[in-house]
Length: 134
Image (tube, rainbow, N blue to C red; front, side):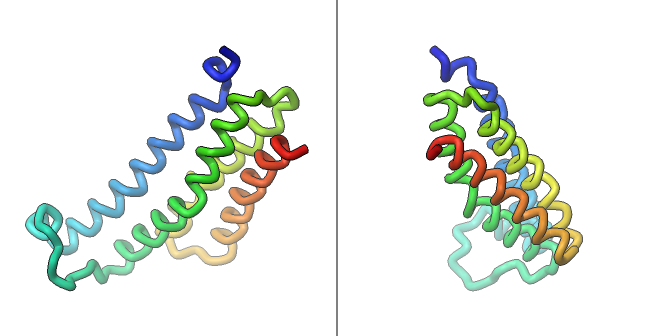
């Protein structure tokens, strides 16, 4: 019953919306560049979107999807095992906030700050893992 009331579960739901934003933005920009017929088709040809913003959206989405499984697993593990210290929830919020900020930074092509924000997200995951390990 404890997992059902975990504050991590609404955050996990918000993270799904962030995933949908990544995938939707990437698809929308690719469709704008190559057309709806390309998007609806089987994409058998070698045509790929070549625009700068479309490429950034694709790379940001791929980057998000690299750490997303870890976030989901850690969130569920913390929801099931409990997080009496609250550090796991703090780590989850840090990951989520950093991933939310990361997308516009990547799209704008802002270096260094973007990397620091990515590190912040990684710290969030490590805090979550630390709660489970220690």
